[in-house]
Length: 349
Ligand SMILES: [Zn+2]
Image (cartoon, rainbow, N blue to C red; front, side):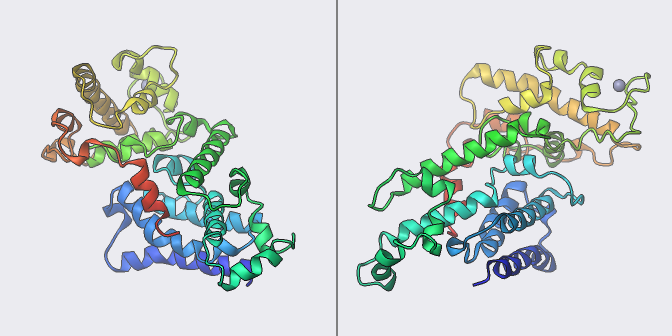
């Protein structure tokens, strides 16, 4: 089987699927980022992954897969810039790189061969194949994930594979954080999880602003953008709006912290707070944060903001404060659990 042709065919299919969804009237902008991510992981990514479990992939194949995933992520976030970095997009919704996805698929395939009944063809051939170092089967064992598993001849259980995968994902994430052009991703949470800003209850406009801050799209400080909040002809940069609005004082954050907005976003709860002090803190900070983000958003537009946040009636589904005050009786008090999410992500394996 020609790996290059297979991957080209798979990625073409994956790229055309969102167009089919559009033709059915399902626009990506109509979904939440989290739902769009689930749709991607359930219906689009499996098309890219078809047959990869038994293919020896090279760097050029991985690059093609990564580019296709990046293109899908840009569609999920509504970016028209085909060169925009997707590091932060990937981190916010906790989607692994395609390189690691290939490792996972191949490790699971290798592990399954250990469960096969003795009278299957592959089981009969394995003693011979295993002695040929250049065989494709032997090549599959050279991935970083398979090599990180403890040496044993018995099949691995799911926990062992999950633990090794988690370790590899963390390692890759730390490399990304420490790598070049990582300022924005380094301002996000320093560990892997679905960022609460994509699922916490808040208005569409509020979520959009928080995500745009994370992605570096707000303020959209092009070289000619000037701050209209002060009269100093200052460039409308991320650092300038922080000092211009005296965000440290507003959000009660120490001046030692370079980006107080990201600092507060990194503290957002991953489950509904139970202590009164935490509830009081968020009731104090949240209105200040959302007002501030609206003011920064206003500076990014020449005309006034068309949408009026107060038009949308408040409900438990779009108000963070109302959500905080709810008793912890429903399932919505928790973040999308890691195990649940992992299951969703990998159910197509
Ligand atoms: Zn200013």
